Length: 150
Image (tube, rainbow, N blue to C red; front, side):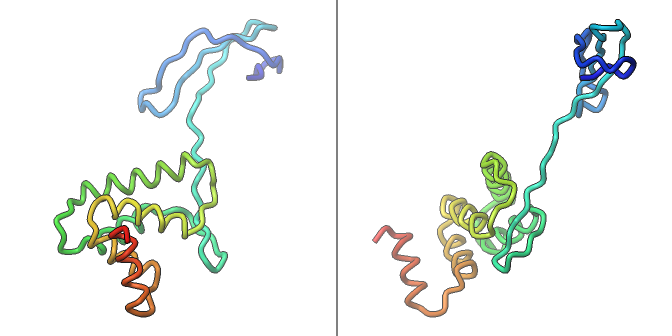
């Protein structure tokens, strides 16, 4: 951190404490050259996720869209909203951990299907039928056979 008074590139931290809102850290520093003190604030940098659609267009990641799709797939099933919200949080965390900032929709869809497969197999098949755009009964049966492990 450069000193705002003399522009010397090094300083030492005298005091650190969280801010009142607990969203950043306040650091009191002292310049190693001129000895003057100054305050800096450290916050977490959030880099937004961008979803690349099949047509090449891009839009920001929207966890609500994923949750809405999962809720529709679980309609009239005994799956709690809390379970679905936790699954969406898990999906979002996996995407953030991947360090890729541009994620193809196919990757998001596969993660949703993985989560639904764990939660409710009927919801999984419902989501897969829309996501994979089954054109006939054979493709539907093929997906069911994959689910059953045949």
